[in-house]
Length: 476
Image (cartoon, rainbow, N blue to C red; front, side, top):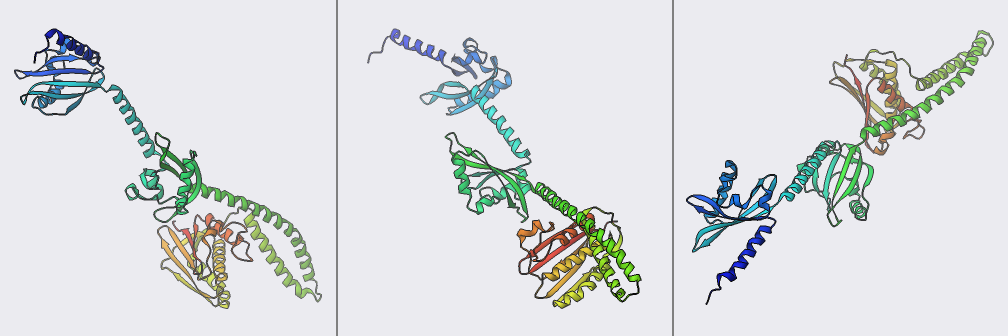
């Protein structure tokens, strides 16, 4: 077949070179001449972006226009391509321009005679990757350093990620949760997860609520939960993030102030009542004393009447204890002696209801800085409550023990028990589980023990009984 003349082939060749010169990237070729990789062709707009030109590159080796270290690095890829290796790709950077180069060996009769390379400008991609990396690092920092617990789940409710604050709030480690259903959302246990997703899928951006959750160790805590969707580019919810904040301390403060407000009302009522009762009592006492001095036949009743007036006066004084703060007479007291006297006082009442009181006191029980009258009042109230809670009789155990800087006095009854839902309200004025109670007795117990820098803890099982733990500091 007759070959076309050179003039006909010349024009396509020129058009090809012009096209390569106008390309956004860069194309170059090289050969190995006497152990040196010499560039035989270089064209494209990228070459000027990296501060070079075809005239500088063609006929030169890498170290002629690049720093020696960079030249040696790229020559290692040149060597691999010259040995016939396919698919060699590497990234480079010059003058702030990033590019990726792909080398392809050209073979004739199985021998490499030349290597052709194409380069693409990836500067914008690199910038986007850097921005993405910086954004990711910022988000990671925000997540890990957040004081709120963050949990990310898929649409099936399985954990993808939790942060350190979540681990501290709930007690689970991230490795324990990954790929498993989120263990803390109370709404999930009530089949509420689907409802949450429906609301989020239908346009709700954030769902916030307060609830009570259970930690890994079983402790119940109050939390504020904020649930929001994570959507893909098409707007479909693909995951869900929940932010937890432990509000237990806030709830305790609110409960404290709520009880304090009620106590203030009770105090004002008690003060007014005491004032109104005291005035006629003073007059009654005076007239009774006059009658008693008279030797008439009714004088024998005056002593009884005076004792009853004194009893009413004592009750009024107790009202005043509620109404205003008072200075307690704190001194070192023997808790064992106080417990023995309380048991002796109420033993007869307990026996009438077929109740036996067992007192166990640890040896070497320390003296405690306290008000004997007030502590005795606490023990009497708790023991009377235990007796009244055991209509069928049984045993009440009072166990005392030393715990580091505290003493523990535990009252264990076998009564009807208290429903756990009532625990937060125990100690509130006028709240009681008894038909004829006022709630003021237990309220005073809490107040007295709080004044002694101690605490009262209650545990109970319906039908099995209740345990009252009184903790008092004993450190000198």
